[in-house]
Length: 166
Length: 431
Image 1 (cartoon, rainbow over the protein chains, first blue to last red):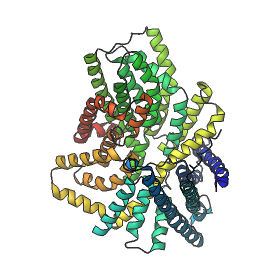
Image 2 (cartoon, rainbow over the protein chains, first blue to last red; image 1 turned 60 degrees about the vertical axis):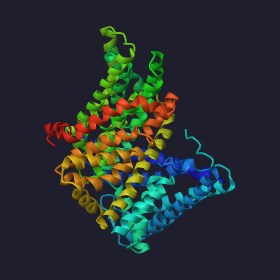
Image 3 (cartoon, each protein chain N blue to C red; image 1 turned 90 degrees about the vertical axis):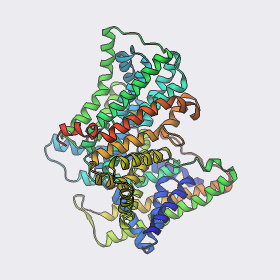
Image 4 (tube, each protein chain N blue to C red; image 1 turned 180 degrees about the horizontal axis):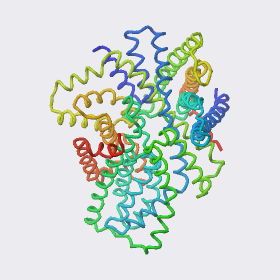
């Protein structure tokens, strides 16, 4: 499991850096095309919104990996370590289940429906389904990281932290 | 509907208290509530659709940009230049360093849009400096934390963008302009407390610098401060949208930090981009799950029920507004700002509008109120950061925070009951 962890972390981080750089360039291009070239680009707005959905979804999985999502630990840190660990096992299962049911099943169904109905992103001229793939993809990643977390909890070895990117 | 409310609340608060990330608490509570009345496949498909749809917004794009430019600015030696500028301008007043701290936080909060970033950037410079001059460490940490919250109102501000989305259509430009007076008022109120406290304790007064040196320090800060002019000027004059202004802020901060000040290396950029994507995604995850929740809230007509219940309690607007404020202060003590804005805007905004409050005014009140929550125990992200930098305990900085809380509360009451503080300036710009 942990052998897969690092390669996936690295791919995810590179992908996020790329998406973030792309979204800045796209919106800058929108400004330039409007003011300098005097010919507003028609695809930049839709493209940047599509990129935002991807950053939101893929980034959510990454933030779950790094444990950066906001939580409230003032109650649980009063519990004994053993209870905290048992609780973490149950709640991590709940997160994995949520990711699989809502994001993979629901998101997958959303992709299938919009694909069949041929719902298009007008200016980009691509199917919305391709943009929505970010939802089940994020679900799969969250489930994967959740399972890694469970493995770490059960074996008692801490999940190795993300290596810094340079 | 009663069943729906019970399930929603029990699942949400149950999971919240068990330390499940808030975005997942919202998602799971929504799913549980939906399953009461909808089959599983349509329920999860609707949720997935609402989640993706909730972040499919051009206005929201401003958030990753301001996060990114804030992060570049935070590493780019900008804090140091802002502090030196403030020091040259007001360091000679009573409680000089405390005042410099407040003003630097206002500047930095305005540029970075993040109270946590302002606390760590300004605090790590100011706290050792204040200690050297004999200021009490706990007091200095308290001042930094309280002052950092001014950046929530002084634009550009990510939380005001989140409110614009949650309220369903208040203009971001109007909110940005509306934030100035209350934000500055808050800063001034804190400075009055600081000056009084300094007189009481006999804290030293800074030296008056020769004019030439003052001008030099101000000139060094001008490129940083110019970003405010560029971004806000562009939005207010309608030259570009808030989102486009954000992208321009990124480019400008890059030029400044990498090109002019040379404090960020290009090899650091991928790391900065990833960090910004992560921070953005945390906010977007909250927005995504909240928009699924707001679907089930309106499907079950829950906001209408709460609104009717509150209005049945009293028909005195002053009393209801006070009640809303007290509830929000309590919420803010436990919950971070973004989820609080996303969850409570759809619930309280209709009540406020019913009482004749404008959505613009309500947004400023809400953000100011929840800013106090950022520095209120038991959960206050800014408080934690400030304690960590000062290497002190949470309990120790509560006492020196008391007069500052009082100042914040007075400003909150002024902003709540005097609409002009929020509405006058935007009106001058035609909003």
